Amino acid sequence: MSTLPQIVDALARAAAAREAVVLATVVRVVGSSYGGVGARMLARVDGTTVGLVSGGCLESDLAEHARRVHAAGRAEVVAYDTRADDDAVWGLGLGCNGLVEVLLQPLDADVAARVAARLGRSLAGDAPAVLATVAGSRDAAMRVGTQALLGEGDAAWALAADAHRAAALANGRRGLVAEVGDVDVAFEVVVPATRLLVCGSGPDAVPVVRLAVNLGWDVTVADHRPLAHARPERFAGARVVSCADASRIAEAVDVRASTAAVVMSHHFARDTEYVGALLAAGARYVGVLGPRSRTDRMLAELATRGAPLDGADERLFGPIGLDVGGDGPEAIALAIVAEASAVASGRAGGSLRDRRAPLHAPAPLPA
Image (tube, rainbow, N blue to C red):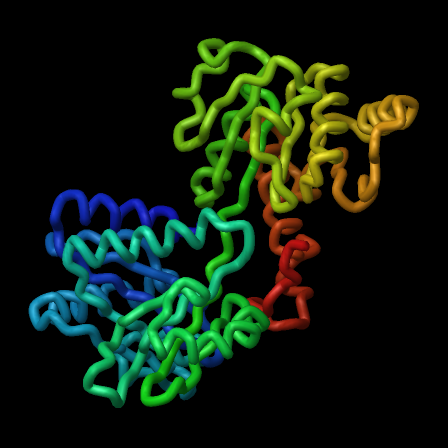
């Protein structure tokens, strides 16, 4: 699960309630780790938390550090080094053989609002953004935790840090830490939330939307019927729009090159119109529910009309979904969302056991 949207929401809620919080952010990873640079956990004064920086190994210990940081009112970096065979020094026995450094920042309501807005802009963008955070400072005037989105700030350190943008993007999820003058800067690549468009609002669309929303995706459901029929409350966390003419779906919804679309209205003519319009709009992933012969008929009909089908071989997926087995709407939804996620990440969708590259190696960015 990507917890960044949940973190942004929790920060905004804390700001609105004038509540002070502590934000824990992974700023450096060496070796193995559960999450990459930018994994976050928000700790509230009452002890509750939102998000994860590991699989649950470090959270309890970090919550204790967060209480101290909140009381002191000063940011600090906590390091967990488990690269030795025996990491009992931490009393955690993780066995992950990696170094993880976590920045703990006490945030008052105003700062929480600014951080939420900064992260929100990154998620809503069209391309990966690079967030630079001061993780160490030998300059008394530069506080640990100071941040800037590269390209937005005009502070001298942010302008100097911009020289590292390309290297940070190349490192992807593993991020980058570099010296910029008298400060150590952690560079985090924030990838925009995956945009999923589900064309159809039948019962089998519900688990698809639920899974995607839980992953933190930006989800829209489109249906040819009035909104009252689609019943938006069935699709919690998603937008529901009405589009009476499927051929004009790109006018009803903002379809971008990064959009993943699932066509599942169960009506051949309507689905054909959806497919033609989505391919013409440049959607990166267009998945079509149903057998291969049905999709082939759609393409044949679109071809007779002279519809633009450039890139259909790479962008059209029918039958939709990864071959993970299982029966029923929930299993089909899992296969659909898994395939859309793999395409969005530039991955083949195979077993990690068979992957020879590092698990968190950067994938090709969307064109």
